[in-house]
Length: 449
Image (cartoon, rainbow, N blue to C red; front, top):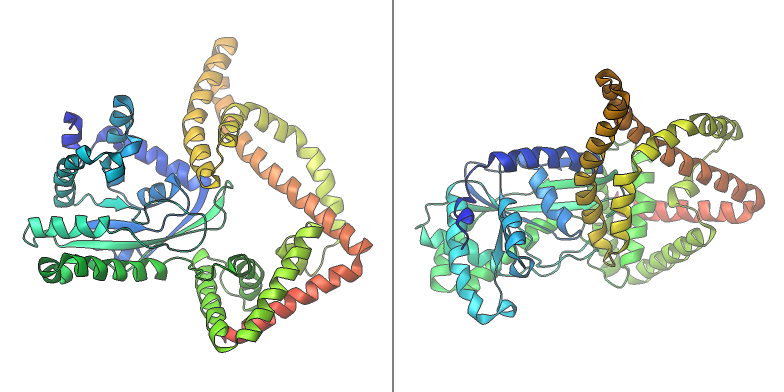
């Protein structure tokens, strides 16, 4: 066991600086909303357990939600080299060895377990993604029992003095990849491990099952759970069709948590419909599938289909505005192209979609300051003026914001043109799409009220 791992539970100033920078960057990449922190008993020894849909980002989402320095457990196979081991240890990550890592290495878990005890005693908190691997659908898969073993063994070893609580965490992404996508982090009711401790001492297997069952229920409550694998895409499309329209019709808050509640109610109502009215359920699924297929074929989003009006004068303002502000976009884009293009190109080599945002975020987080330091140094060397260099630095940040928003504005304008053209050239299909979408919303609304 490397000596620096012996201090992994202790507060680290270097880690604090990196975490502060990470938290700032993370909330730029994702529009992050955190719910339920007031329910977390931070005076206890805590294990945070979240659903695992988006690779490394899931762990970072837990990290950004906490002010202290939690320690995460990860598969031992990522600790491939001494250098990587040092980096991961600095990042407060401990390895967990499995049989596939070699039977002879299983004994190393004894040292890891000893350090988890130190972490729990120090009230730092441990982060675990108990599904074991990521999966890009809104569905919790069966949890591995490792989290239960760690919790029970630690509590038993300390004679129930740690008062370990497991916190179910639900992560809900509006999009797994795109910059400025929405992320909702929900902390659930704490699960007191000690209430199962006597059962563990009598029958560990039964205790594992009881704790895992309670944890699964806790996580599912805090995330979007779509159990129907056969109609998964239809449920997803229903979320995009129904929830925004319902929020607007009922004049409800556009807060992420409000949309989450509507999604949960809608899914529960449609699930009930599947049992009580199977023929009506199948008709609804068929209509959603047909409607989404036609929308995709003509290249329209569900939101654009439901747009009630699209005025020509609005486009007449948008188009010149894009042209006038184009130089600002070019300035911002050129001066930020190194970190942006670097993150994008590296992520293009990744085949697993769930790794893309992790690659882009981490690469950009380090490339931006490096690129800015190089550019500012060159500017200062050429200009010889510190004030102008400061102005240039400010322009880099403002330019990045302008370039991002100009690009978004450009794509929304192009979509508006596409919608207008579609409504003019194919009014019958446009009205059919709008009517079908309204019909779907009406039927679902009838189920939840």
